[in-house]
Length: 164
Length: 205
Image (cartoon, rainbow over all chains, first blue to last red; front, side, top):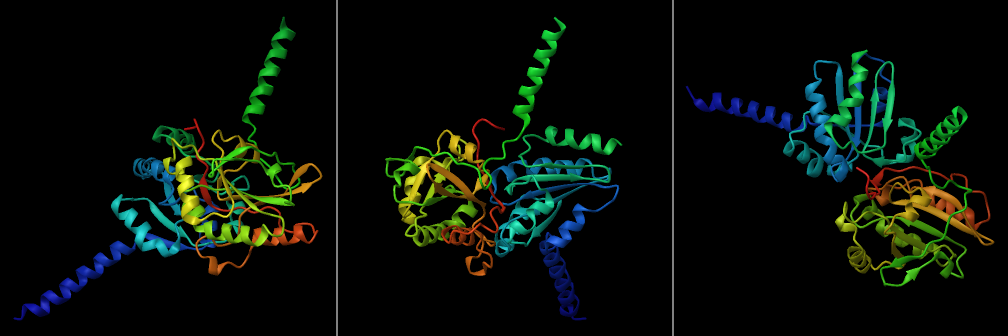
């Protein structure tokens, strides 16, 4: 029995598995993918937050969205974090940030540099400043161009939406 | 007594309404105000000081924001191209220094020196100018044109369609607007939007 033949495939499998974990964090999407989320007519309440790793107020409010995602995971609430980081910094900044901060919400990197072509489609009142957040479900659609200052402030907005 | 109460209530509601209505700031066609703000060279700068200018590229920017940084070289190039045509850049930093220490006046002086800004970089310390213009993010551009004694807003918004990669730009929104203004034409696209860092306001949050 040569252990080499057992251990080699074993370590190969493990390394592939780890590689996939590390790279499964952020999906790079185009506007169409995000737009379909914005018009999804489901019972799930989507909380979509626009942010970037370099945006200080965004990073400050991120834990509130993480907490929301964890606390309401069984109640048809889904947090999606849409990063506006530069695509070339996906590995060096975004994935690193996600790993270091153990972000568990789904993160998408929106690769659409012509901001003017899609900002109005998200919300016509949005100036383009981040952070910005949309809360959508079948019955309502709320848009916030602001930073949430506490978990309580964020959850107060979400609670009435899921009680219906 | 009842009417008095009612009128007070109406008055109160009117105030509430005024307070709750977000001020969207300048749109193309609006008259812009001039200002008197301290430049990085220590002198006070007003748009009225530029006797020969036909208008201005008023740029709300700052030191720290990656988007503002990504556009610094392009803003310098804009000034070098359009100042000789009568449209110099005047850059304004309106960020609250307590929220964003990197945007202090001293740091502005450093940044202007490092990047050799060929234009005025002034400090809107009390944020009155960003408020009046309705600037929300950095960079946020306003092209204003002198018409008699007025400064008329001709363009509001983004510089171009790719903040990350200047070589991948396909739509030069701001330059197109300037070229049309200089040619005496109506501006085709006079308002655009862009992702940017929020202006860090005093006292909120």
